[in-house]
Amino acid sequence: MKNKSEYSLDNPNLSVVVPVYKEEGNIKPFLERMESVLSTMGVAYEIIFCLDPPPDRTEEVILEEIERNPNIKLIVFSRRFGQPFATMAGILLCKGECCVVIDVDLQDPPELIGKMHDKLREDYEVVYAKRRSRKGETLVKRFIAFVGYKIIARFSEVPIPRDTGDFRIMTRRVIEELRRLNESHGFLRGLVAYVGFRQTFIEYDRDERFHGKGNYSRLIGSITIGLNGLISFSTRPLQLMSISGVIIAGFSFLLGAWYVFQKLIGIDLTPGLPTTVLVVTFFAGIQLLCLGLMGEYIGRIYDEVKRRPKFIIDRKVNM
Image (cartoon, rainbow, N blue to C red; front, side, top):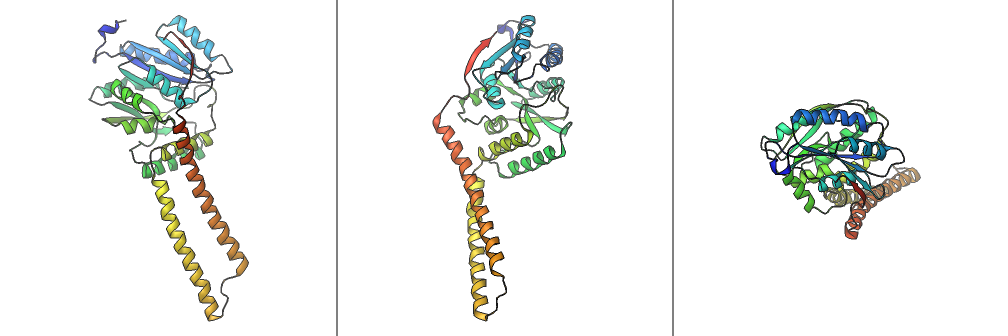
């Protein structure tokens, strides 16, 4: 292995950031494939597991692997902060000239890292992996993802790429810019898009999880991620609320004029109670929807104002 003084742009020090929680069955298979890829690439590397305290043996398995390979490192948080913040912790604490973010469940193939690294040398600062297909995902999950990416792409004020996750490689220049950002939501794909610089992608077919199930509700998790992408990087939903208010006010005026017209001609063309119930429930739903949307923005303002740390580290191993 080369000394740090021997690292260069042609043979960079590569950091691999891996957020983990309840993944004891995936650690060893992941490392077998990852170490094989890194060995073939011929780069000096570090693999940083960012661990939310789990109820299983995930930590013990990682510690065993650290004894075998000193390039493996571990960050353990004081409690469960969630995947976005675990990922950010690894990115901000890594030492590499380049940094790869990848999940441990092997849905994202480590074998793609070599191609992404080669692409990075073509004067790009970020190379992200774009999903061409998704194995093992239900039709509902795919539909939610499709609609969510459509909405984010339409309303976001920064070009957040579609059909992507956190699987990407980025240079130290991007990492340092991420360090300057103080957002508390941890929506990595939006933050990287906000940083800018030259970015490109490589398409791939996403595999099923190697072992076990995901550690969050797919429906709720997807909606939460979508809201982060939409609300954290766009104020257009608030503008739509204002436009909707004008349209609904105009509709109400026309409806009132319609009732006045009926009184003038002396004919009751619209049944009273059903119409009243329909109109009241419609407007009540619109009002609650707008209040909920405003609440999402206010909640995020509240989180930002508190300035609490994004994560708290309990201990580091081999760092």
